[in-house]
Length: 352
Image (tube, rainbow, N blue to C red; front, side, top):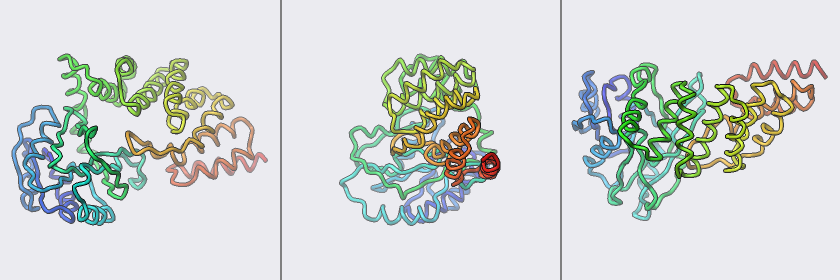
């Protein structure tokens, strides 16, 4: 782990990790809140790593200090649920030298109840040190797994549970680092992509549109290009650039029509304009596009209730109440706005 001033959450994640790890290694980048003492009390070896605005450098320093054959990385605001702890212990016990990295689900964001995951990304969670793995990228660091032997382990779920205080403290940090790299001339595809994402997340939509244009002018992995187009469409929608948003969303559909996100992005253009009939085919397509990947980003709601919910609203506003009622029932499962959907269903019944 690499940490700085994480006293609020550190002991919990170290307790999780201690159930399946033989060694705990905490690389501290300058804490002043008791983080180091908490780590030591949990049985961790603590090393000092100078902070240079480079997460990969700090991650590599922590990796170099580990002594085990296999390394699991975590962040201080992560949690490993009990069932996942058991799965980690079971999987790690039988690992051999036929694989270099295990890719596992990272449940990165949750709804307001904290119970439902709404965003998943598959990450290289378990690494074989003998494979010579190295982290790259100053922000959103990653291991280049191109030459590695990899395997997916869906049971090894890690949850990202950042607190409000942690989010407030880190606000703007990633964008600051990426802007510094960009200004210094770093126009690598990865820097361009995550800079565009950070501008989007900071609601700087005009700048993010220009940034995504730079991204799309470079050679990207297909999944990054897919999500860059979707993000571009969503930023243009926020700017009420409807024609451009539709064009970007449909380009994403062409890249991968088997996933629902792009269909939903295209439908949302008409949804925001209350063009209910025009939106219906896109949301209907999203309900049948169910190919759930194990690479890149996964917006979980798009594979569950979301397209059914949008489709039901559009059908109801188009006067197709029986169909809206049937579809709306499929929007209830795991929907954080299930009560609204029930009211919609009651209204559809009243119109029949």
